[in-house]
Image (cartoon, rainbow, N blue to C red; front, side, top):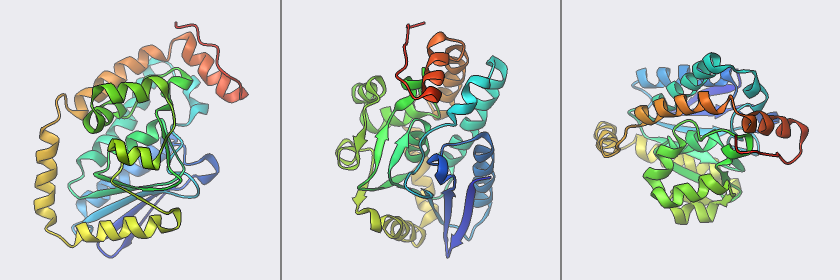
Length: 256
């Protein structure tokens, strides 16, 4: 299922474990991740969480190979599967630390930014790469970007899909800390332990207070995404984007 879960004392560690595909998220991975998040929510011994990727990437995005296989009904179901997992991660009433390195592309951004804090290796590269396969941002990415950056900067990153390195990401406010790559796991675990050893009930309530400031809510934005995704997957540009990705060539978009 390509998701690992282990405990280190009071810290739960979730690992995206598909390094041969740079941890691109399959449907089965979304389901497995949701199951582990629910287990963590019910486990009082786990007081903080680290989410990381195996190998040289955090997450390169969704599984593009399966995108063109969806019709409007199955595509809606797949969007809702992703949203359930992202929402559960965002609403987890324990501090969640993302440990990122290498590519954080497409919906990988949503996974990282759904966490409370992001510790980034100096190899991290963020890219809102959705437009490259002709789809709208997914997984609440627009919600998280606007919350962290504001509307204008969020639009610039989505419209250009340009890479953002770790240091720029910190200056923008996407990440909390940047560390040398060799220190990533230890730095993220140390931060998680610091949170776990504090008054986590108070932190859970503070998290709800922060979330109450967001209008519209993540749930409302995800429903809008689902509707938009169903439409965009019927377009020429999406089909062309997927074909170009598979054939390793530049896409020829027509704007329809």
